[in-house]
Image 1 (tube, helix red, strand yellow):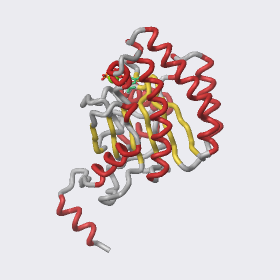
Image 2 (cartoon, rainbow, N blue to C red):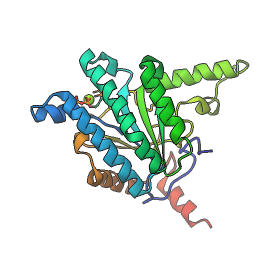
Image 3 (cartoon, rainbow, N blue to C red):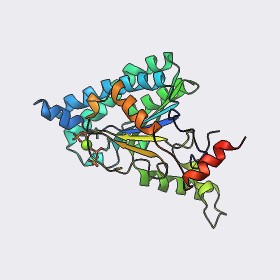
Image 4 (cartoon, protein in one colour):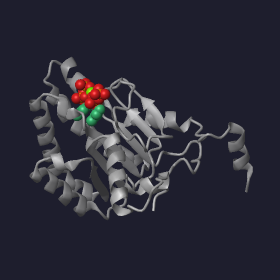
Length: 252
Ligand code: IPE
Ligand code: IPE
Ligand code: MG
């Protein structure tokens, strides 16, 4: 059972983050800068995902969560949306065996009901094939929105325990779509924007935030190392004072 709230335990300063969550942004601008169609950026973005999975294993990270398609991305031109769906489908087909061979567990979270039946089936197959893998858990957030997540958790809770009249945090947490993972330690957004764009709103409560101008297709091992180094220099206090943290280190 993961710790449901990372706000309860203080990780050591200098520790590698257990859970890294990334908004992979900047594919379109990466392509436009090279006079290429936006889709070329998305396909380079898939290569960057592959590299990131390997890099996370090398770094000893346990959970990697990637924002691939937001609930707001349906607002994009129909052609771009359908290309993104096709890319997602082919990436799943191509990568599942490799993920499985490397002991990687794959999860896809979000409102999957809006995807084609064929894609939903591919997702279910990939998840069940890799369900018992232990080395790294990769979560793809697809048609995901942080508000959607909180609302769906609330509805599940109400259905399961209609007798509850006063909702508390610990009631809701098990129904959130990433209840199987500890909350992210490190959030990375590539592509220069400094916003959360309806990503893991609940889970990011005490996550360390890291923003970089690098476009997602250019984000590789060196850039991940830089983000981790930035994380390792931060003192996570969770509301306490620096002095309190020093005291607790002294305690046997
Ligand atoms: C992120 O890159 C990928 C998705 C949202 C699917 P963008 O497509 O948002 O790239 P920019 O922000 O337009 O450069
Ligand atoms: C956020 O990127 C969503 C994903 C990376 C999947 P967007 O490019 O859609 O974000 P906004 O709309 O610029 O905030
Ligand atoms: Mg963008």
